[in-house]
Amino acid sequence: KVTKEFIYGMPKAELHIHLEGSLEPELKLKLAKKNNIDLGMDTVEAIKETYQFDDLSSFLDVYYQGMEVLQDRDDFYNLAMEYFKTAQKHNVKYAEVFFDPQAHTTRGVAFEEVIEGYYKATQAAKKLGIKANLIMCFLRDMSAESALEHYQMAKAYQDWILGIGLDSDERDNPPLKFAELFKMAKNDGYKITMHCDIDQKDSIKHIEAVLYQIGAQRIDHGTNIIEDQSLVDYAVENEIGFTKCPVSNRFVTGDLKSKEIKSLLDQGIKVTINSDDPAYFQSYISDDIYTLAQAVELTKAEIIQLAKNSFEVAWISEAEKKNYL
Ligand code: ES4
Ligand code: ZN
Image (tube, rainbow, N blue to C red; front, side, top):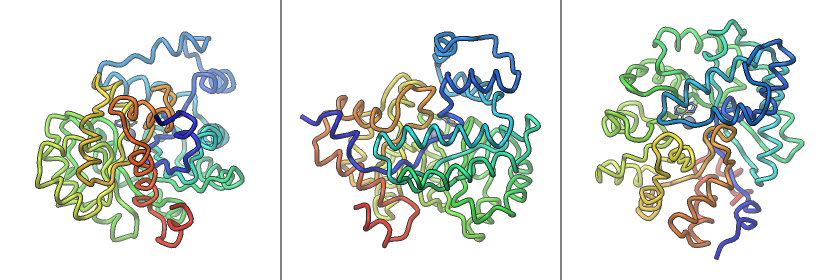
């Protein structure tokens, strides 16, 4: 029997966490007060009551609304630092963290405030024993032109951004909508990943496009790949990393998708377990691993394999990986 303590204590990397999704109710209230924003709620309990979702879009509504309290670089810095402090308790040694610049610029917050606050936090995280890198995500329900504009804004900060991702509402927003931009990003030396969320209208088509046309090194979620054996074989062969988030799955689909995750792990896919939006789903990385382990009775060896995978598919040098593995 594997204990919670073992899972918490196991050194791990987290590769799929949206910093904006780590905004805990306590900090949300504090920042609302500081920035004179009326949330219409003044207790942690009242905020938590709104954390009930039927699907991705009902989650995203609450997620974007919550960001209103983030106004200046200190707010972004403090948000990220709270995540890193919690990650430290889960023995996260390395983190690649997502952020959504368009969710802030569209509210009139300058790109500089966002990136400078977050980057400063990644540097301060070193003192907590955590190495961290930023992945800038584009909102796929916004235009390709908007994504390009933000890509250009980020140029001056390229050294601070390791990878480019794609998130938000997948419906009618296929990967190829951003094909040119991601091609450019690859040529410019960014790492590439994309969300392929659970049970989307065109899940298989989207996964196929991400693997064959976009040529991403990782896929976020991507669990529907299980329906297509040739895609599974390709992903195994090419050691594509899959960042799974079981508790997030339960919130947005009603199902952990634990059997699918276990089967993909058994088939040799580089599966990793992550928290996605830990504040909203009230589950940080070790809780996600524990929940999955309970649901499908993972062995200790399988749990260790998940942690090994997290370092193997991390965007760090082979030499660095050796320090963790
Ligand atoms: C997200 Cl669960 C999920 N799906 C797509 N985009 C997202 N951004 C934050 N959480
Ligand atoms: Zn995500």
